[in-house]
Length: 388
Image (cartoon, rainbow, N blue to C red; front, top):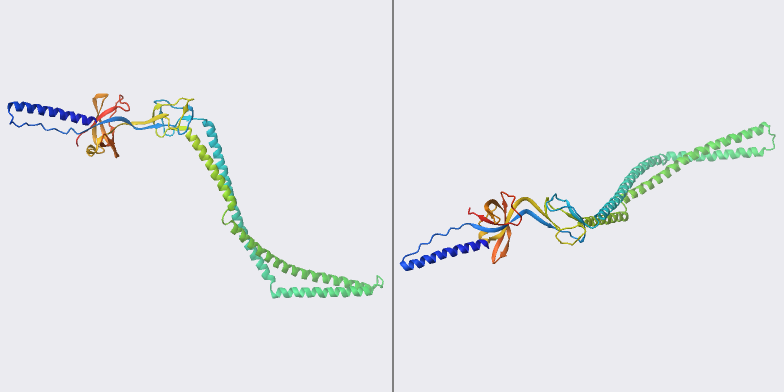
């Protein structure tokens, strides 16, 4: 390490002076004591290199022919900008659009299935409400005929119809017994009039009976129908409570899952075919040529965040790093600019250690508080950490 060599050379020079003094003293006065000048600690000194705030080497994750190189060295880019493409990206974009359409269609089918199920459920509930209302009306109508009074009226009408029929048959028999009478005979006319009157009486009695019987039968039938309708409506409501048919729902969900999987695959293929800037910054290196082949892991573009300069050192031992704190002001001298001293501030001290040349060392990152157009990435520097 540089600082170790400097310290050893200093000790070597001091030792030389001490030995020389001792030799001269022995020649003059062997008993005279030798006084040594005190050695002062100059503080911590470390070698470092100039780095950007961030630097990211980029490469494709798949192999393919370089189709487009959209940047060159020195270009500024924004986060998510496409830097280069490989393969037939137009075809990949078309596949993504097609997959997106399939997802929309599958989602629409699922939505329609659920919406239809909701409509069916709503209709089933409405039908149940109507069925209950119809049942109430049917029960009310049945209550009106299912009484002793109505049964008595029905029996009376039946008897009246039977009596009227008997009277009609008697009148018809009387007329038949007097068929030999002249057509203009008053007696025959009386028999004929009696038949007509008996027929009218029978027709009225029959109509009265049938009307009452119809009311009874209709009320009874409506009650049965309404009761059956309520049971059916209740079954329909129960059948629609859990949404769409389970088989139809499973199929629709499976179609949607498949469409989403195809979309994800298409998007991944397109993503792998595009080299995208993960940060905003400046392109400092381009290793791509249109028409050439690119391989996974092969360096394609180097992108840096040049918003600030830093120097980074891994030259601080465990005994030295404890003397340094974040926020501490330091002095930096670059080998290429020996006549100028830059001020910096300790930005971060790594928690992770490394073993170098038998020493435990730590990485320290220092932010420059001033800049210069002459500074270049990777320049070597010496960092002086004055004693606080």
